[in-house]
Image 1 (cartoon, rainbow, N blue to C red):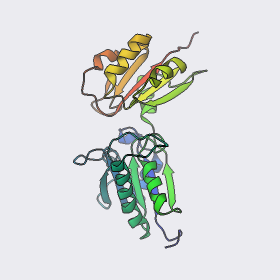
Image 2: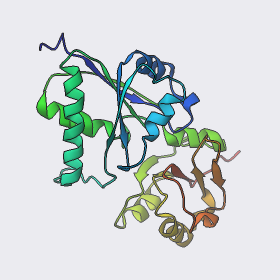
Image 3: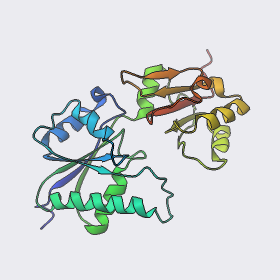
Image 4: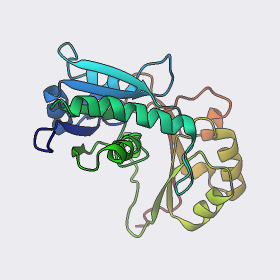
Length: 249
């Protein structure tokens, strides 16, 4: 099949959780795509990205496939875990089967495809098998943007230097980051709160942090005293915003 005859792959950011935060373009692409392949974190679970997308776009006329992508760490420039690689390759096979039959495929993914998303692992696995594919990336609203809006506090302002950190850290880099940067976004912090609060207490930054759990959803929780979140069974959609500096009038 030539590239002209091939279907197109759409990597679609569906936002942080509230279906109404999907972009107009994301909705148009999802409506037009006959096949959706959606990632899920647990084998026996369901896809959060699919649930968000289906909140505004009917799946009645779609072929929908949920595929398991294990939640394991990826260390760039190192050999990836074999289970992860196999899941990426399996998903690539499913996508290519449709693309090679001239069928467009949408891959809904949480937040934005460019920010800690499964989407680019899938794309890399597809390009290992087929160097030239038609792909369109549809950006989405990030969790940190939604959290910032919800608490009415900017991510960056003036001369702030902002950094984004996945909270799956195993070393002292977080301490160095907190010392170096003016504003820090900690993503996926749900399993790390005790350790993070201990560090922030030590550095005198606890009162400059706000935790937002399940931002924009009916059971949203905002912790302005983040110590009260320690020991709770927090959801995966938990983001910690830390701002060290304030505007002075």
